[in-house]
Image (cartoon, each protein chain N blue to C red):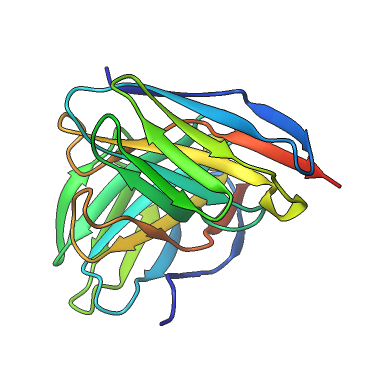
Amino acid sequence: EDQVTQSPEALRLQEGESSSLNCSYTVSGLRGLFWYRQDPGKGPEFLFTLYSAGEEKEKERLKATLTKKESFLHITAPKPEDSATYLCAADSNQAGTALIFGKGTTLSVSS
Amino acid sequence: KAGVTQTPRYLIKTRGQQVTLSCSPISGHRSVSWYQQTPGQGLQFLFEYFSETQRNKGNFPGRFSGRQFSNSRSEMNVSTLELGDSALYLCASSYRTGSNSPLHFGNGTRLTVT
């Protein structure tokens, strides 16, 4: 069965304290790995798509990487406005057009 | 460009009633997907429509149904509501299906069943 697991569930950082969020996946035929950001009371906002192991993508203080078993979202020198829940999702051959989401990591950055 | 619009934002219903949620996709997007989000289960796929045809359906009971209109707008319906149906229902649109076309989500409809 396809599965996506995110860790940690919650992460508290001081402003400027870099860290990484983990997304482990077990899927049949990964077609794409997505990262989303969700703010309270809002829908998920698309950040990145990764397609193959070794691929990296960056946007401001965020960098997403992909291996054959997991993806990492690296946050460099975070600011309070980076506080949100970060979701990863897998697009697999088995799930058809459905994305399989992890339960998310809630990041809190304090100044 | 306007984003995905979901109405209403909040709903309170009584167990046994039915409810209809509406979604207007981004202009030009022909694929609309629906997801249920709960604290315990996270986001779970309900169904996807493309050009008025249901392309895929998740593992939810038949009480959950949907449709898509010729202008790509979509509705989902839940009949005989149960307390466990309380959740945030998210609609997402994309230009086409597949990883090359990421989902763009609306802000959801918060359904509370009492």
